[in-house]
Length: 347
Image (tube, rainbow, N blue to C red):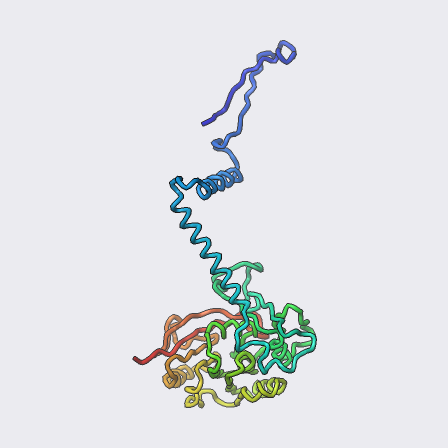
């Protein structure tokens, strides 16, 4: 350990006047062990010590630990690369060659894809690139740009909204109170989380303007999608938007106007069911529980903005809570919390 070295020098050797010859000079030599070194020195010492541990010789005591750390690091890099490759991979049912991608703008190539960001899936208050408990673990899913162009043509943005080349979701008119509809990038991410089969049927109770129903019909070109909406105005908007779709997609999208709870006998034909908050409000929650018991095992039920139980951490009888998450709204600021349930096997 080095300390403070005191050097007594005679200024006479420096040819200074005699009265100054007995001056004592104290020279402090900064060393790594000086207790008053700054935080930067502490960080440098830590990095240097860490590098010695990692890059030391094989006979070093940390050699065994470092080999395990190196293996874990290599596995982490491999999984990260595989996850990035999977996120950018276009599923077969969403391939550009599907029927929904026939009548497309001429300026879009068949291999062009969207470039959605995490901010398109969930709205958070932190800076771009940050993470929080609300968006941690959330994955972004991209689709062919031709497919997204068809959806934007069905739901044209207002003139004040400028469509960007980055394929961000347009600003759409807000839905009626109690009917939370998800933005297209958020719906795509949620649909991928459900891991649907190509031919699974989709049902939306309280479909509003039909965004989820039409998005499902575009994404899953081997499936059928149905929506039930009580509002005549919202139903007319949905029908008008469906009329802007290609004919082969229109034949697989069904929109009905009426009470969603009155169609319980038909719920069993769908294996993925979305339920808006206004459908289960009041005494609708008890009637909803009765209809859910008619569903087949394996059916996924997604409740938007409101849990199907008084305790959000629990699931209705015969169901299991698969997860929850926040997804960005369409036409309104903020997110909607979704609750994902799965019908359990009676055995």
